[in-house]
Length: 87
Image 1 (cartoon, rainbow, N blue to C red):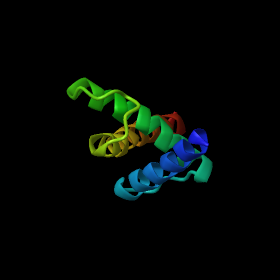
Image 2: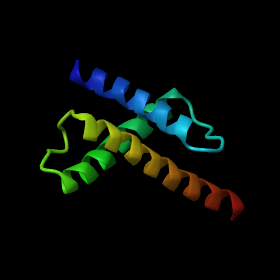
Image 3: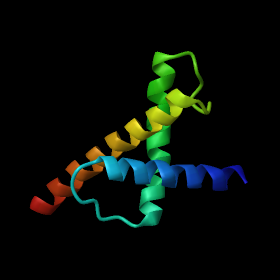
Image 4: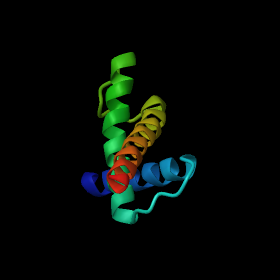
């Protein structure tokens, strides 16, 4: 059950990151959920560096960090995808 909640949380975070990122991101719901999950790990890691929270703790800083992490992952994927298309 926890895995299903984590994927749903990843989908919500991914959708928020895609809504906040300017431009068009062409990805389906599965890739959006994976984006949110990856962003949660990146954001959780960044928040754990700044605070004394663990990576897997659920708190406000972790939620904001998850969205920031998803934005970073989306930016990185966008840069790599545009580089691959121009070569």
